[in-house]
Length: 300
Image (cartoon, rainbow, N blue to C red; front, side, top):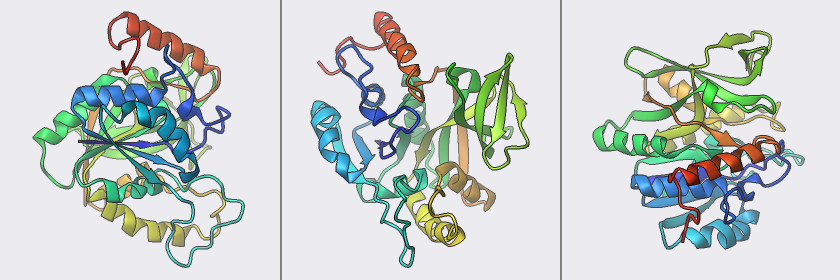
C-alpha cells in the first residue's frame, strides 16, 4: 500500500511553505504524523509530489529522517507538463491542481494507493480504514473516500474549502459540492465555489471530503484522458483554472465507470489554513502525545 502526499502547492493564505512548518515538540511537520500513522496502518511506500525546486528542502528535512522507516519516492509536479499545443501563461505560478498532481506520481505507483494533502492532520483511523478497504475489495473500478463530519473540520479563523458529500443507501458517493464553509451565528454555511449565490446550511454531522482518497492505478488512465479535455475547455482562463480530483472523480461516477465508497471517520481534522491555526494544532498534538497516541519524539 502506497501513500501519495500532495505537497506541491504553496500555502498562500498561511504565508509560506507550510508543509515544512514545525508543529511537533521535536520539529515534526504535519506530514510526519501522517506518515507515522500510515506506517502504523501497514503502508510500505510514500511518494511526495513536490515542486522540483523544493526537492533539496524536502530531502534534507522530512525525507532523510523517514527513509529508514519506509520506502520514499519523489515526483515533480511541473506547470509545463501539459498536452501539446497548450501555451502556459507567463504569469502562471500556481500548480494546475490535484488531478494534475496525482498524474505526476504515475510512474511511481503500480498498486492501490491513498492520496492526502501534506498540510492536513488526518488522524490514524482513516489510514487503517482505506488499507482494510483494499484488502477486502478487488473491483478495479471501486475506489474509496474518507468522509469527515464537517463539525470536525472547522477553524475559528476563517472559511475553509470542503467537498460536501452526498451518498446513497449503500454509502456510495453520488455527488460532491466543492464549497467554502464557515460558521456564522451558530450555523454552518456552505457557499458552492461554482455557484456563490446559492448558499445553504449544512448539519454539523454532514460528511465532507478532505482530499483523502483511496485509488487504484487505473485512475491514472482516467486522469490522462480527462486532462486533454480539461485544457481544451479552459483555453480562456489558463491563468487561474484548476484540474481538481473531486471534479474528475465525480465525472467518472456520472459516466458509470467507477464507484466510490464513502468511509466515515470520527477523527478530528487539524491544519494550518491560517497562521492563527498553528497554536491550536500544536496544543492538539501535545494533548495526543500525553494520551499516548504519538511518541514525543516521532522518529526516535
